[in-house]
Image (cartoon, rainbow, N blue to C red; front, side):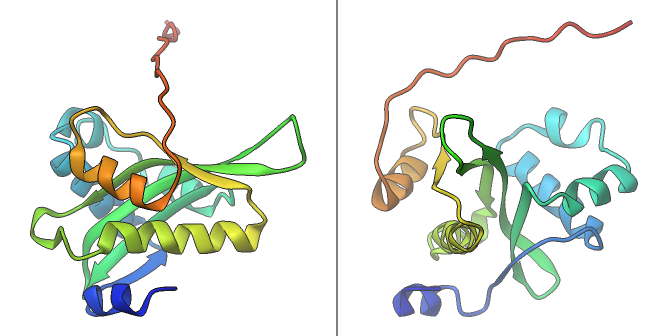
Length: 163
């Protein structure tokens, strides 16, 4: 990590990228997301198989970063590397980011992003980007402190299900 003050805030928390052998930690992270986003339907109602999660964690373009205190996942993020077509470069999109209620305000979210940013630099990626919802003031403040803000619209376009 770059900032010694940040390291002091998160001294008891270890941050690392999950690999295909850490499926139980990925399940803990999904449970944390479900709690943090109050969305158990998306994160717990139809959990993927161990094989699916192991295959996902083995993919080079998928990132699951966790903040651990002992054996407990107390924060984490998922992100995807997206190769671009307009130039020979890629971007990383942070899809989900959450920290357990009792561990918030300790610099863990920022530490997770910094770890991912440092990994992105090693991979030669051009930029990280993330979306925040209006009203999520803590997330907006965090992301504003780390980068440029863009006002964009987001649309979910449904895909018909096969019979």
